[in-house]
Length: 324
Ligand SMILES: NC(=O)c1ccc[n+]([C@@H]2O[C@H](COP(=O)([O-])OP(=O)(O)OC[C@H]3O[C@@H](n4cnc5c(N)ncnc54)[C@H](OP(=O)(O)O)[C@@H]3O)[C@@H](O)[C@H]2O)c1
Image 1 (tube, protein in one colour):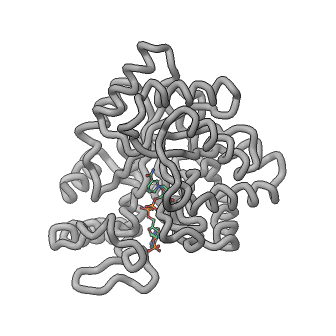
Image 2 (cartoon, helix red, strand yellow):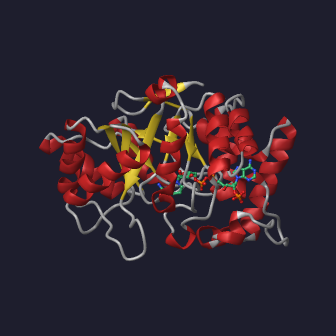
């Protein structure tokens, strides 16, 4: 699979990243720890992704309360050096590992969380490590120093920022430059046809500083697949039945009108809605790669389809407009 350089990190990543956020839970939400994708299904997803050329996997310490990292670690144990040497793991820290446990980006916590992530993953080093959220209670300089410690100790290749707005990112980049600390080489924020806020705010920084951008939820949690229909209940077992909170704002005529136009354009090209939505994202010059969150191996099909869809700038801008 085609790869792209991630900022100046020296790391190249496949244009599709396997999101492992649902392994053993639904993201970092303690209410769902122990649920989500089972071990067998997670192994099948990782096998399918790897066999089709996806070598970058995204996880976090708190996903499934540690279960996501542990499942990746167990899967890696079944593989040889060819996989262990080539896999690019991105993990993160910020959220509590369980209800009532600590959170944030303080120096001592980062040291502890990084070590326990490496233990669960069964590796000595991860290529990529992210601040999972902005921490208003810790000076950014302290966090960047802790990340520097991890890089100097050989435990981390490069660091990135997730869920940062433009002001928070700009401040971090300035501190890195002034203090000679590692800089955030890429951003992982929510971004899709239905969530384009970063275009006007974070993208100018991505261009100015030559950093990468690897959005999560590029299918808006499934909304861009066409599985949710106007005036129809969500399919049984779908994310809208389990954890609807992040997406309730999408239940509007404006969104359904746009989705129906996406479906018309996808039908006109004989591709899936999800494939076209991912092709739109990948056609944006700021985007390095998308982090997809398949629930089953066949959910990966649109990601591979997207890599073969060529959108002209006019077609891309037209889709942008449909959802603006
Ligand atoms: N940094 C952060 O704060 C953050 C936040 C969220 C996610 N992430 C990362 O990004 C990854 C992806 O996020 P996401 O899961 O929200 O991404 P997504 O790809 O937008 O949504 C995934 C969901 O969409 C549905 N879906 C996907 N492909 C489908 C298909 N072909 N047909 C029908 N439904 C399909 C499935 O929902 P059903 O369950 O309904 O089948 C699946 O759970 C996560 O695994 C995690 O690694 C990071």
